[in-house]
Image 1 (cartoon, chains in turn purple, blue):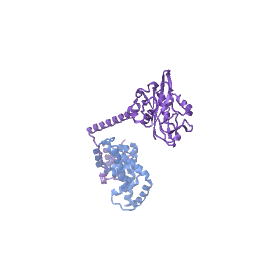
Image 2 (cartoon, one colour):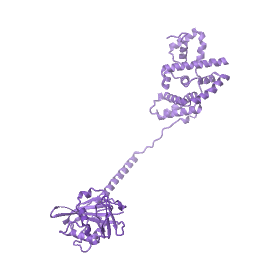
Image 3 (cartoon, helix red, strand yellow):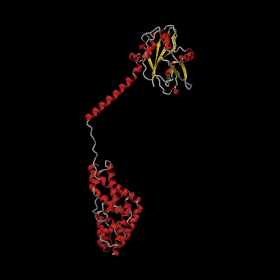
Length: 296
Length: 161
């Protein structure tokens, strides 16, 4: 399209905006020479082009930026950090293993020595076997249940495997739920609660003789394998507990025990409990020796 | 672009961008804020921006920020335009530059922006289209319309004088 008197305005604007190719620019300039009456209009359009401006932005420091310097950690420091991390992780692992190991060690002499209560109760005069030593491996809030042949109680009991069972001690007696029986060589009341039943007192004043009798029976070859208490009125209840299966004990993780003395106050100490297992054969009877430590 | 490239952009384009914003908003503080926020965005995206495209990137950001700002302050802009019209019609002109400065107030924001980009920065229609998001034909029509408005204003001032 060529410039003419009808479309010259658009060509003039394109010319002023620098949007024309050189040949078109020459055509516009030639058109202006040939049409002098349009030169004033061309001049007016030329004046609409804004002149240069001296506006500046100050201070430019508001806009300048610098890269944030990153801290470079030397490689040898990284190695030290890695070594420390490995050491700490290893220490944690070892401590974790040690924490769980004592309760699984069969017949720990060290732990047995820690619990003089049981040793004293078992070594009282009048018992047929005064050198019987019940392995005690329970720690705080733990109960140890060992299944041993009755005939081997006098022998190396410490070598018998011990099965640990956790007991969660309760500070509130009303919340107790346990099928367990607890005996002690002190004059105590043993409170147990099974399911939602009320707290019942099993024995008022279990004498040391009861424990003595129990221990003596353990030593005898022909004596019953299970004697938990000398209180006859509770025989039936004891029997009920005695025939409970092993799985009933082991699968119940919500056992809570509270022991009260004659002043109806909670006591802490070690307790043992014997339960009879179903005999594998006529000549081999087994008892379960459970030792508890109750602490608050 | 690197931090050094960015600082070069500040040296090269900060004045032009500020001029563009000041002529568009006619408010010094607003123009400075728009310039700073535009460079802030360039700094944030410096790793994605090619140095050769940094100027158009800057002006594109600034243009859209200015459009948003103008829309939010439409009422204020209207109030400011009234006294200028009265003054322009009655005061003695001291030169073509001042006349044109005031004539820019007769344009709408799009027309004004295109004239500024064309005359001050020398962008082509195609480049202006990229910055403003318009197509080439729209840029051409808008610019031509703006020129004619400015020409008419110049003619009217000359008649008054």
